[in-house]
Image 1 (spheres, rainbow over the protein chains, first blue to last red):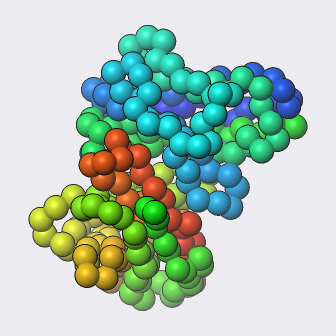
Image 2 (tube, rainbow over the protein chains, first blue to last red):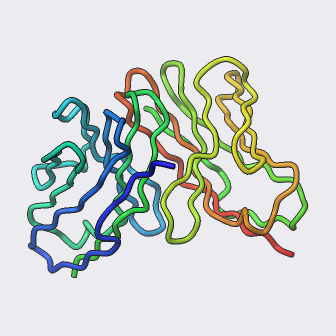
Length: 113
Length: 114
């Protein structure tokens, strides 16, 4: 069964460093998303991406964040200068259409020291 | 404002007992509703979804949920809980005017005692 994959599973970085989180969505899906979950809190929407551009972004997704689909398979989230409060589990998701169920990857746990 | 409320942060049930997890939503248009389950250290797995039609929807692992528009609710049920059902359960709402964005509730942690 096709699934969303994410790498790495755990990333530790120093405050102020840049990180890139990688995702491979399901191959025939056209919509891609990033969510985050701070420990003990709810899952929060960050950004949606379709047709090589951002469809919607939340207030959390400020200038420090960017997304890219550099080739036909990968979907990346970059945090330019990490802050302590960026420590969270980051989930990638994909869907066939914009209003279909989203399939989530296993997540990348980001720890900012 | 669009929101999802899961009033129960933690529920404990005995194995074999029935289960109901509550979910209430606030949404300005016709909602699409989802239940996801998250086991420790794992991602989110879709249990079931409601888009339209029959308000009682069946999902995987023996779960079902009923959409009640008048109560703005989408409660999750299972007639007989198994120990492997212990996990965190998230209700989420999306819709046509959200571009696919899902809004999640706080989650309900389910513990199952023998």
